[in-house]
Amino acid sequence: MGSPAEDRQMNPLWDAVMETPIYIALSRQMVLRHQMDVVANNIANANTAGFKAEMLLMSEVEMPADPTTELSFVQDFATARDFSPGTLRPTGNDLDLAIQGDGFFAVQAPEGVRYTRVGRFQLDQNGTLVTTQGFPVLAGGGTISLDPDDGPVHVAEDGTISTDLARNGQLLQVVGKLDVVDFADRDALTPAADGVFDPGAQIPVAATGKVAQRMLEDSNVNPIVEMTNMIQVTRNYQAVQRFMDTEHERQRRAISSITASS
Image (cartoon, rainbow, N blue to C red; front, side, top):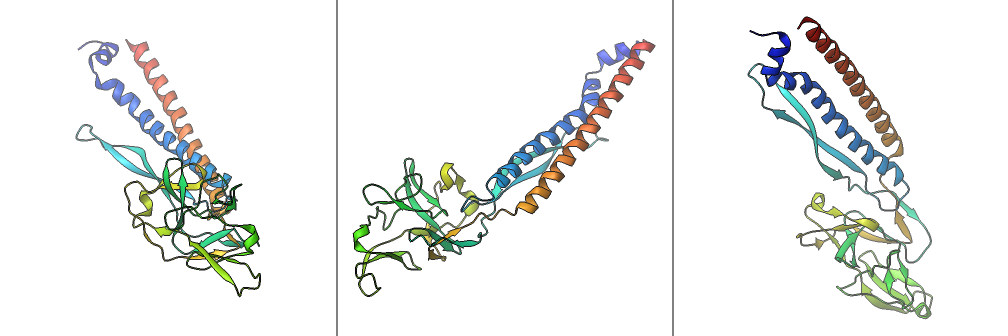
C-alpha cells in the first residue's frame, strides 16, 4: 500500500466522494435560481391584465452509487401555469372584454392562430378589431370590422358583437360572433410573447365561460404570496451557500492533512 496521496491518485472514486456533496448542493442552487426567476416574473406581472401566475415543478433525481450510499440531486423539469381566473375590473371601455370562467379569445398572430385571456381590444386604422399588439381578433374564423358611425358596440355573453345605430338599444345590428374557445389540456398550452398561447396540436373546443363587456381580467398573481416565496427562496439559497462554504473548508482541511502525512 502506498502513501495516502498515492492511494488517492489510484482510487478514481476519491474525487467523486469528495465532490458529490458540492454537486448536489449546486443542483439545488441552480433550481433555486430558476425558481427565483419565476417568482420575480410573477411579481413583475402582478398588474398585467390577464397574466397567469407560474410555478416551477421540480423533482428528486436519484443517481447510482455504491450499495451503502444513496445520492439524490434536484432537477426542475417544467414550469406550470395557474389558470385560475383573476378579478374582473370594470373599465367603461366598450372594447374591453373579459371572460368569466373558462375560455380564450382567438387572435391571428403572425405565427398562426393563438389564444389569449387579455381582452384589451381596439380598432386599427381600417376599423378591424385587434389586440394592443395589432393581432386581429377572430370571429367565425375571420376578422371583424366595426364602423364607429354605426353607434355604440354591444357584446353579449356568448361573444356576439352588435352595433346600435339608433343608440338606444332598439336597433341592434349583429356584426359577428367572437371565437371563444377552450382546451382539454390547458397545461399543454405554450406561452408566447404578448400574452398569447400556442395550442400546438390541440383542437379547440367550445368554452363554458361568458364574455363580460367593459371589463378586464386582472392578473391572478397574489403579490403577498409571491413576496413570501421570494424570501423563502432567498433563505434556502443562502442556506445552501453556507453548506457549500463549510464543505469547501472541510475538503481543504482533508487535503492539507493528507498532504502533510504523505
